Image (cartoon, rainbow, N blue to C red; front, side):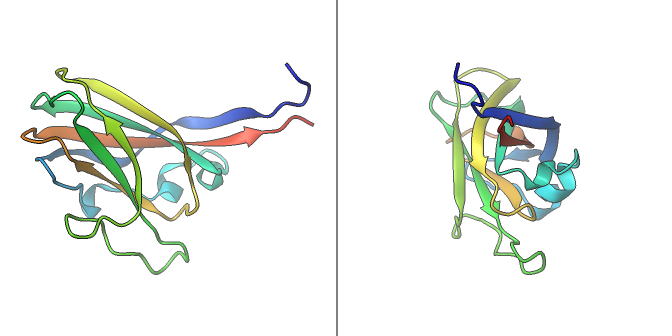
Length: 150
C-alpha cells in the first residue's frame, strides 16, 4: 500500500432521512416523512461531508418481484431558504440512485455508497417503483469523506 493513500472516512451512524412509510406501486414518500441532511447528520461536521451513504429498509408489505426498483430523489434547498419543488409522478427532478430489489420477504436492507452531497440542506424522497407491491420503506444516511493522511 502506498504511503499517504487517502482512505474513506465514515462518520456517525445511520440517521433517518425518510421515516418508515407504506408506499404503493409508483408512490413517493411525502414531505411529512423527511428530514434534512443537516438536521439528521449531527456528528461533528458530518452533514458537510462530500459524500453520503444510504441505507434502504423494507420492513413490511408485499414481496417485490425480482429486479423491482426503489429510487432516491433529492429536493435541493441550496441557499437554505428556497426549496425546489417536491418530486412526484409528474416531476421526477434530481434522480440520485436506485436500489434493485430481490424477490424476498421482509426484512430486507439495501445500501448505496458515495452519493455526492452538494447540498446539506437537501431532503431525500423515495419512490416505490415495484409493480403491484406495497412496501413499508425507510431511508437512512451517513456522511462519508476522503481522509488524507498527513
